[in-house]
Structure formats: structure tokens, C-alpha cells
Image 1: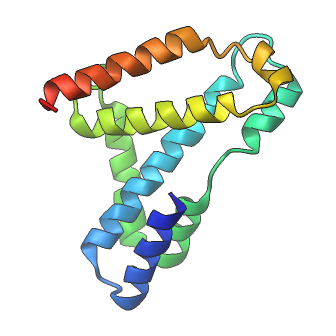
Image 2: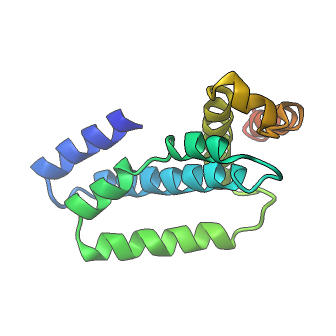
Length: 149
């Protein structure tokens, strides 16, 4: 994600009104928010200890938020928060292509983050890999089936 942000900021520095770069930055910010939310949700599992929560918090991301704040104007920031609200209002069935892609990216990022925790924390994390892998597999199959890929 860092390369996407860096390249987008380069474009915005050269062309302040580049709409595609602003749109790209907005999408990366939404992904970052959803990733952070997914990570924070893991700290709400039953009986997770403070060490697990600490390790999860070490993986929170803020680069896209900093880029938005530093390199854009108030109009783009307002548009971003309107888009985030629209995504939150969508149903959980993931019937929208954009929502499916965001869900796919976040599920993989979160599963990867949880899997990279120290072994002592993985055992008590209640990550339930079987269900997470099953749900991720189903989402991938649905995407491939719907898009005829």
C-alpha cells in the first residue's frame, strides 16, 4: 500500500488537480480504515489478553490518512467521509463489486497480520482459522464466478 500512496502523492505534487490521483488516494484511505477496523475487531474476541491487543495495535496503519490530511483540500476530505458513510450503509451481503474487493483485501490483510503474531499469542487469539479460511475461499469463488474469471 505504501507504493500506491507514494506514487499517488508524486502525481499530486506535480498536478494538484489530478482527479484520478485523488480518487486513488480516497480508495486507499477507505481500505486502510476497513483494515484498521478489522484488526480492532479482533481485540474484542473473548478472553484475549493485553499482549495480543498490543501486538494487534502495532499493526494499525495510518499512512493513507496522513497523506489525505497533508496533500488534499477540504473538498476531498469531505468527499472521502461521504464515501466511507456510503460503504458502511451497504448491506453485509457484499453484493457490490467494490465492497467485495475491499472485503477481499481486508480479509487477507487481517488473516496475514494475525498469522504473523508470535506463537504464544496465536494460540489464545481465537482467530478460528478454519472459519476465516472457509469464508475467504467462498468470497474468492463468488468473485471468480460472478466475474467469469
